[in-house]
Image (cartoon, rainbow, N blue to C red; front, side, top):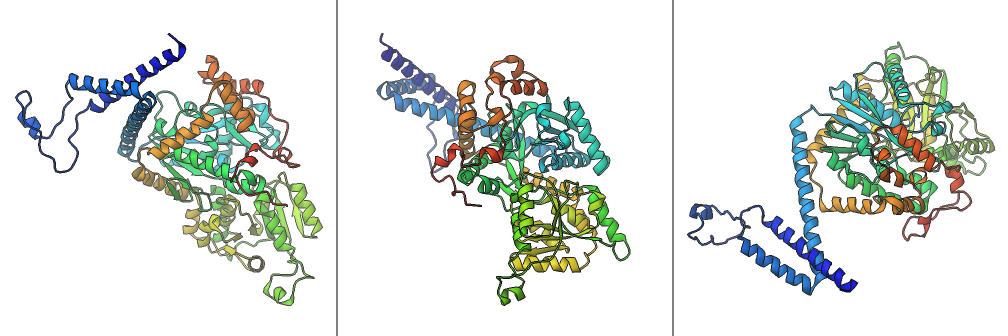
Length: 616
């Protein structure tokens, strides 16, 4: 028999078998007849009249099923492509129904747990890298454990060869146990004693091009042993965690999955890669829809996601709250010996360009009306800048060229005693989701001068928050703060800024998510399939897509992770990361070098992928 005939015969047999399976599955469970005014089925001698009158419908006789299969096989011979499409669609729908039933059972089981559920927190960074997802995830784990829950914190393990690029002072750890000990020491020193919780590590790589840690392989397998509880999973930065995720769906792995969005990646894309804004927004939306039952946005400045709630579930460490309470209890308020300051990464993305602009208004070219309104003229104010970053040299040069009194003091922790004497914190950033440094400054009883936008809405309620919308309002707010004394922090304000208050809001948000969560819809399953069609490929095809299309950097080669049993079944993240480092050495180029001189990614050729990059 010729090859085309063999293929056609195989196709017909497959279609007939699929139709048979669909017919049997569809009729295997009895169900009441559909609604509407229908007459009862006629009674017969071989069936119970009482059962018929009850409206029950039973499995049809085998002859009826056989006749339907024969008709299906005949249709498959006449129109094989159409028959196969129908059969495949039926199987997909049946699979979707099974997924929905399983998820509904899981959600009912979670509701039955009440407040006695296990919490698994998965984040994208770990101390001593002092970024939001490392500090806030650690503090969340500690305070949720204090609330009486069993907690597992999952953090990335990066090889010592790449740790020097992340951790301050080029500090390195030889084993995960050493890094875990450092995390616990930092927590005890900065925030006191807490209830016990577990720390687990998953393999990851540091991408110097993006300045981010990227998970390696299927992260879901590293969240616990086979018999570990799978109740609540909290994904810190769910879009970041799942950009290149090709493993199990988190929503099927856990009873309830809540994502907490930390970073405004759209703002960073607009600043550094405007041609990729459409791509970043689409991928972020796909990841949140496919892998989260509920997404919590810290503020409403973020892009739209499916099933979202806006709530600040972050707080300040107790050392900031204690400093604010100390000042509130001091007679007449403890004096402030210093003026204005900024603390954070020295990047243009943090709004430093706006700060220079607001402070260096052109005095000579401004009309008299503008000078009277506060929109013109140089604001003779000294601002100390604490922090380091890739744009430090450029910011220093721009401040010197404008003859501004900006002093660059180097990196320092916000809780350092040398910063207690400063009275006014200036934060001109427009890319923050919710500024941790603003909350810390308020907690210490300082004035904060912030722009009036959705990312700062949580802070409007505080007496020491001075907001602005225009350059003139910024100048007036800063002058007022420097000439005034901050109001003492009230107990209500302290509670709102503390991690204890943030944990209450978080657990309330989890309760709301549990009540509103539903089984995955067809749109959710379509999003999952679409994402897997991009990132779920294995072998040479998957490596090629990750390397040449998605520019996955150090995690672009993972064929060995799926092929070699030793690494596929490994329970040691250090072993997996060491192998990845040998297979795919770290890149020797930074983000700024990668996209300098007109070097842009392949996505600039995609229509509607974003605005063209504006000149600096």
